[in-house]
Image (tube, rainbow, N blue to C red; front, side):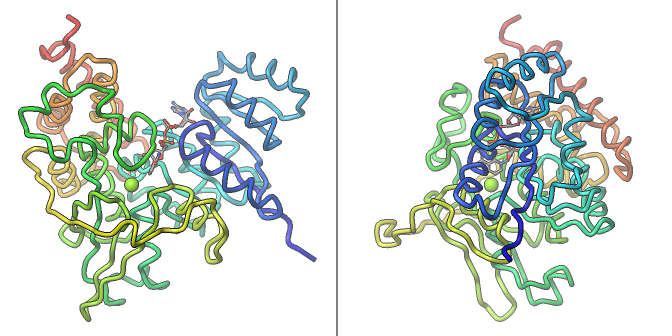
Length: 401
Ligand code: NAD
Ligand code: MG
């Protein structure tokens, strides 16, 4: 008898990763079934997704929108149960009928539901890198304690996972891994002079040359904070240190990252830049399923280029290295300050080059503490958001006042 389909909760179903996840799942209805879909505010899209994927539960983050969701589901003739609020997000990440949780909420808002999935022992498909940046030790401990499976969705980390030996959790030294080569496209401003970065607009920052992504991660890619967050993510996922992770610019985004071994071998994972590949890999692992991604035409690609990153033009990458080295709450502060600064940049309140200024200000003026408990992490997150807001409004950066 065929096994019954795996139940999947998609946190952040209406976002770029969420939509791609549902696309892959819909290609394999015999393998995957949507148990719950969640969204922040886009109720219309969420109802439309429920109409197509028929989950048992639909959740909106904002309780004020639950009425709209109930009405939308009823009008569509669906039996999907509506819920709202942060507890409901954590609840649908831990349901007994959920086997896999796609953690694809953007930013710190994803921390508690992603952690709930880890605690409940699910297969966690982790796109929400900010959760690991904020609370790496706590998150990894939860995964180990509950026996959950953690599969990286970030294309680089998924590539690294694919290039690692199956028993890499014995320790990278023991399995002969010397270095991780973390590739970066360099974003839309890779070739810009430092002086030209002052005047770039949110629209330019969101026009990524190779990937289609949500607005926050697009700005992070343009500032290279995305690579900084990914460096920290790699250190937690693969239990290593920043000196073993080398960031390499690779503008074609065809190699998604590499692993270098003690015998001189370097293994790489290649593919077209389409998030459905890592999503399909993590859903099906250790098997393989079709993802809808076009096969890579390597002759068409023709050449692969590599350069070293410039941390003077892109100081966010340096700030990420430094905050991981500093340890404790530093990476939670880095993440929170970055979220506030990116939002202010997207609202045209600060310049692109003010983003690292806001983050440095927080890291330099705030006291660092231990990040051993969730309370410590959440307190650092909240305090850093307040300091970052204040530095924008009172620090003379806000262009609207
Ligand atoms: P997105 O902005 O397109 O989607 C974000 C999703 O989170 C939406 O469903 C939104 O409704 C939900 N959301 C936003 N704020 C929320 C809140 N306060 N409470 C509850 N839900 C909320 O973002 P995305 O590009 O899909 O990225 C999602 C995550 O995946 C991010 O952490 C990002 O860094 C990571 N990621 C994305 C890509 C990519 O190619 N898009 C690649 C690697 C990693
Ligand atoms: Mg990535």
